[in-house]
Image (cartoon, rainbow, N blue to C red):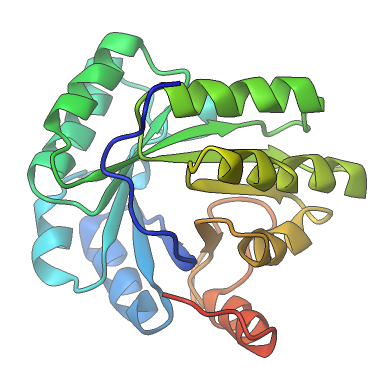
Length: 237
């Protein structure tokens, strides 16, 4: 398998997802979330005026830039080249992380890799309807690791506890070849996985701002999630 580039040290983090209609609103939400966040995810696809510079210059926490396309549950509906260009700009400007989909066209994926010097690339895969069988999940994980990205992200929708267990079991497979993995489930049944994934060695979990909208079903407010993890003795970044 291809060795992932820029591999960060293993740690557990809470990423607070920020989605707002304007840069001004997103900055305000991000500032409010900074005290309880280890990482701030800026959802460029939610912005009417997407740009990376204001966030990098005005926020102090490590930033993750995501520009999710409509075909993977996001709001960006324009040309793929334009979408990925914003992520390339974020990487060149020194963002801590950028998120790009496993299903993205390979030549665009490679453009982002070429631009990501000190920026970690999260290669993501989402299923908003259900959770695939274990062999398909294992294949997705394998393709993520072989992509050359820094970190994998596999998020599905859970309807039963068996769905949750299949996704959390991926942490064992990822650990076997030293590939940092974000893996949990959306939905009510999957809520517990947002906590358990860190207990099982997951790289990061996602939370909603304490005041603001969640960006995915089942996201817990950041302060509540941090309180739960602290009560479990979970060392956070």
